Image (cartoon, rainbow, N blue to C red; front, side, top):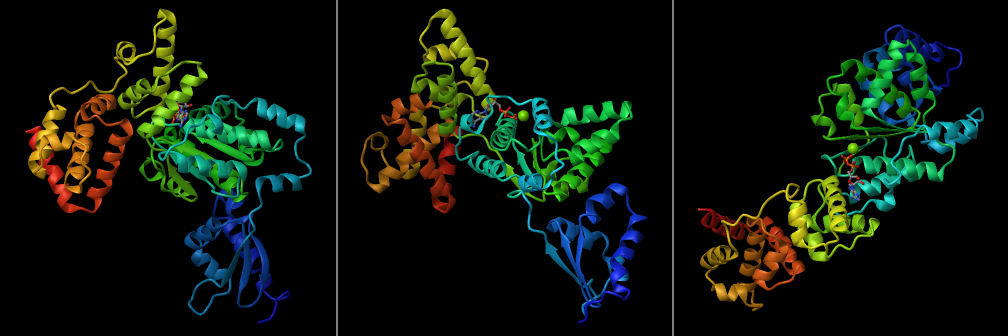
Length: 451
Ligand code: ADP
Ligand code: MG
């Protein structure tokens, strides 16, 4: 194998580039081919340094035939390319290297345009099993932008904290690194900006801004890009430019990438990095969120009331917040103590389900007793033998699941604490996963209760 400095191979990459340049858009060329460096070229292999794995995949999946035509070919008939992924340069390293960078004055004005909610920080984000993963990944991204997960895609339903997490990332980066230029924008604002710039014929300026002047791009609610085909392409180009410079991108959405009606190219790009879901918080987390929000308002929130609210408002944190605000206002105005009664009166229209009186605890106990062949009095008692303890747990589980009452109500009926009931529910849910008989027995009880 000889190093070839004089023969044709030397120019083969350049020839390939000039051939490609005529066949793809300037943007695609800038995004995909310009960042590639030739490290070595011999008669039987070429070594290329690419900024990330995506560039390699892009080249091989879109230009294989052209590569074969211009570059050395191996025994398998594949392009003989040795790809080396460049060591990821962190956004801040890139920053240090770039001496001609904007002065800190410009950064300040850049940041003053950043519209962030000051309450949305990692500190005020209460975590639980449903959002822990997203929060810790977000903290990783904020600590090392461009180096951990890129892009980072967060999806989840309305009011579950996506915007809160996005702004937390922005606050953290701005607080820690004075030089990084963070742009946090809603998809709607991005589209509006693009429309304005198109009207004013200043699109190039906008493109330059996003592609050359942003170190961290945070985009909220990408679902608004659905059915906006023209804007998708512009967004995608910006995305590719940034990601190939290892600039951090974080995107939020109400659905995972594959369920969005966006071009295949967009979906593929968004799936490149880490896709994480933010879920509906569990009861305990909802209670913790309520208590946190109440504390912020200097409001005394008794535990049983917090549980009552959390049981009735279960799929939207924004509504939990609304409930606290409403309660705090009415208790202050009317000078009333905060009780379940007050909650029922003030929040009636917010509570998600009214108690279903058709099914009673007695009803559940009788059906469980019949199927598991035990006595109702045993279920109400405290015997710890397995034959009784398991059906008792099943009764608590079914009562919790089927009666839309409160945990407090069940706690009174069973003479057990909240945590014993919650523990029973968890334990039964776990057991049915690999106990077919138990699953069937529970199914029979449920059918008996309903019919
Ligand atoms: P999304 O963007 O997912 O619709 P937001 O981020 O706007 O939701 O959250 C709605 C409200 O709920 C915000 O005021 C936010 O601070 C609050 N919130 C959501 N999740 C949490 C949490 N885990 N801890 C504290 N507050 C939360
Ligand atoms: Mg939001």
